[in-house]
Each structure stands twice: as structure tokens, then as C-alpha cells.
Length: 212
Image (cartoon, rainbow, N blue to C red):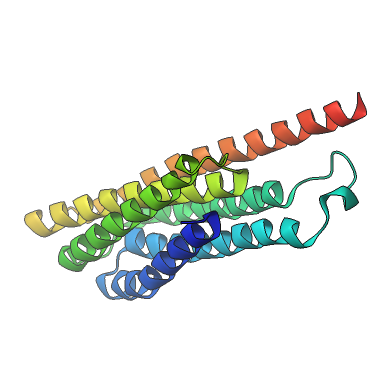
């Protein structure tokens, strides 16, 4: 399976989950599930950017770009990680507000089911992307950004499913929903920031080499 095909499969998986997650998030009053849905929608856009970044170099002659000019994949990685960071900061703010002002009643069963399914689907997506390096191709930064998103999505969905299970079992503990959303937002934002720094450091190193 080619790199483009792998990314296309992950794009379809993300889009297939968005509607279900948003619908369940609204009906179950779950901020964590709504965050999942918004995250998957942003991830789908990020995969689209990564696909565009892969296709563009094939159509544009690489010699037409000046030395040190940012590659399309580097730009794609920055865009993907950048809007993921912004989104997670918004989620963290909303989660903190619910923890301070009070959390509405959350329906645990649909949260458990839809997040459990989402976790399994994202694990499958991550395995598909991990196979990219097995094909003898070096994984570029745009694919690394999508892989980061997919792994984070799988972990986040598992955490939300666990919270839904506890809420269902206890008939309460609604504060777990924003607490899990906040924890996930912090972890994902940290890794998104780390990826942004990695891309910028690589670009600075490339620019220094071209000027030497």
C-alpha cells in the first residue's frame, strides 16, 4: 500500500467517525466526546493537507525551489500540529470551566460505546500508518504529524470510553468527563508543541546548511 493510499484510508476513517461522535457528544452532554469529534474533523483536514503536500512535489520541479525553502511536507506538519494545539487549548479551557462551575449530567453508555469503537478504529489507522516505514520509505514530517494525531486519538478515545464506563457504573461522577477531556488536551497539546519545535529546528538546520 502506498503512502497516499495509507493516508487516504485514515482520512476515510476520521470522516466516518466525526458525525457519530458529534451526535453522541451533543445528546449525551459529553464534552470529552465532542472534543473527540472536533479533533477527528481537524485531523481529517490535516490528512488532506498531508496528501496535498505529497502530491505537490510530484507536480512541481524540486529544482525550482531555492535552497532552504520549506518543503511542502514541513508546512503540512506545521499546519496540522498548529491547529491541533489551538483546538486542544480551547478544549482545556472549556473543560476547566465545567470543573469549576459544575458538570451537567452525562449519559455514560453512549459515551462508552462510541468512544470504544473510535479507539479501535484509530488503533487500526495507526497500524496502517506505521506500515509506511516498513516499505523502505523514510516517514516524512507530514505523515509523522498524522501518525501523532492518530495515536493521540486512539489514546484519547480509550480514556473517554473508560470515563463513560465509570459514569455508567456509578450513576454519577460526571466530573470525570471534563477531567478526562482536560487531561487529554494537555497531553496532546504538549506533543503537538514538541512536533512544531522539531519541524522548526529541522528548518533552521536546513537553512544553516544551505548558507554554509
